[in-house]
Structures are given as structure tokens and as C-alpha cells.
Image (cartoon, rainbow, N blue to C red; front, side):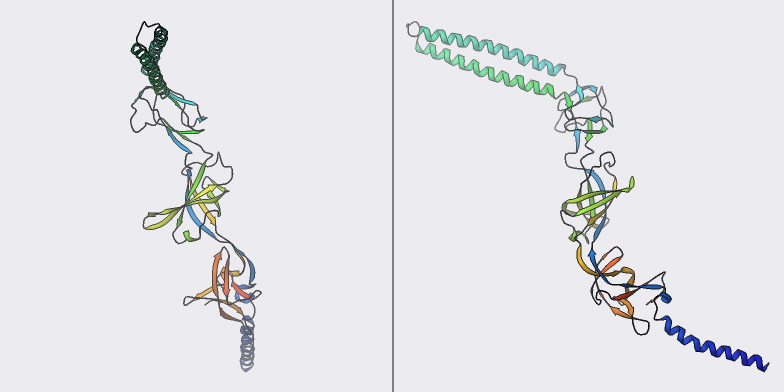
Length: 357
């Protein structure tokens, strides 16, 4: 009994003697804290603004096409999805009444041309008779006036004929741009009435002229400038990254659900036809100006307490807190403006363990 008790006390004494040494050594090594030591280093630090956007046609890339004349639609030559070229005939309205106006104007022109020829010949005869004393000067002047009036009637009739031909041309609807037919809103046999608001037959979209409207939060808009590069992805092709550049920033804010955003136009700078479509949702990253050669540390090394930032650095016995002043954060790194020098090592805790505050 006594020997057993003596052995137990001896083991307890050994354990109590080892514990202080183990605890002391544990504070000096990053491995026992569940973290690693990382040196502060100099590097270029980029920054990005993340925004959600929409793929939209550029100005002039989507055109609603319709006739400028009234009448029944006789022929519709395209359907949704058809590819059309600029100048291609899309539709034709009935033209009987318009063609009749052209024929009438042509006949009127021929009539006044005949009258003008007679007036010219009569004037020439009058001029020849005047020196012989057969007619008076007043008769010659009257013939000259009739000749000039007939010439003016020719110009007036020619203008009427041109107008009639223009009206006839309105019955043939052609494509003002090349692109793809996005919608068709009229069918053959329907009657359309021309008015101040031109009816739409088809909508043509040039899929080679698209842009992205990125909606940037008011907090970030101050750093966005024209000319900055950007990238974006769409849900249809999540692995495809499209490149662009900031082309314009709308001055008027867009307020939705009390959130203030600004429309930033991203011009797409690479071929994309066949991939992108209007109204696709885009996830946009706008690259702000990079900070060149700044001191950075991993974001995970930074702790916060009482509204102030600090890091854990090696000390004679374990680790100690050191206040730091931080700047821009980008990805896994954050800029250190004060509190550290290049080469200083900081503790980066891993798996939620290590030096915690």
C-alpha cells in the first residue's frame, strides 16, 4: 500500500514539472497555435468593383421596322430568327392605289410638257412677227409669260410625280440594318394605318453590337472611371470570361428598393456573336487603378478588437499584439499603411485556431 502510494506521488510530481515547460514552449512556435508565420511583402495590389448587369443592344443595334404607308399587308418575307441584310425586303403592302397616284402624276407631267412645248413654239413665232409689224410688243410679252408659266408647271408636276413615287416606295419595307429578326408583330392580310406613330412589323437586332449595363452601388461609383478594364460572365456560359472597358457612366442614379445604383456602360472588346443575347444577366468585375509596390499581408492575419485592427507577431515569449493601419483590401491580401515593415512576420491562424482575441 505504502509502495503503491509512493509510486503514484512520484509520477504526479513528474507531470507537474513537465507542464510549465510545455506551456512555455507552446507559445513560441506557430505550429502549436494552429497557424503559420507569413512575412509582410511588397506587391502591386489591384482592386475590383463587383456589380450585377444586363446585356443590352447598343444604341442603333435594335431597330423597330414598320411601314410609312397605310394598306393591307400582302407579303411578309421574314420570321423570328431569320438573318437579314441591310436593304433586304422584309414586307410589301398593297400598292394599287399608290401606283395609280404615280400613273396620274406621270400623265399630268406629260400634259404640261406638251403645253410647254406649244408655249415655246408660239413665243418663237411671236418674236419673228414682231419686226414685221404684224403683232404688238404686248402680244410677244404675253407669249413669253405663257411659256414661262408652262415651264413652271413642268417643275410642279415633276415634284408631284416624285412625291407619288416616294409614297409608293413606303409600301415596300426594307431592313435598315443587318441583324437577326427578334420579333414579328404583324401577319399577312392584316391592315395597317399609317399615323404619327409608325406601326412595327418586325424588330431587328444586331447581335454583334451589344454592351453591358452594370449597376454599381453609390459606395463604389467614386472609384469607377472611363477607360478602366472590366470582365464579366453570364449564366449561360459560366466558364467563359468576356473582356470589356468602361465606356460611359450615367450621371442619373437608378433607385430601386431604396438602393442607389449608377448605370455604367461596359463596351465589349472581344468577338462574342453567337454567345451573348439581349437581357442576359451579367456578373461584372470592374478593375480599378492598381496600387503599385505597397506593403501587404494576408487578410486572415488581421484581428479586430474595439474597432481597431492588429496582428500577432513573434515575441520573446510566444506572440504579442501589434496595431496596424490598413488600406485597400483585394482578394486574400490587404494593404498595411503603418505598423509593419517589409519582412516582419505575422501569424496567420488556421482552422479557426491559434492566437485568438
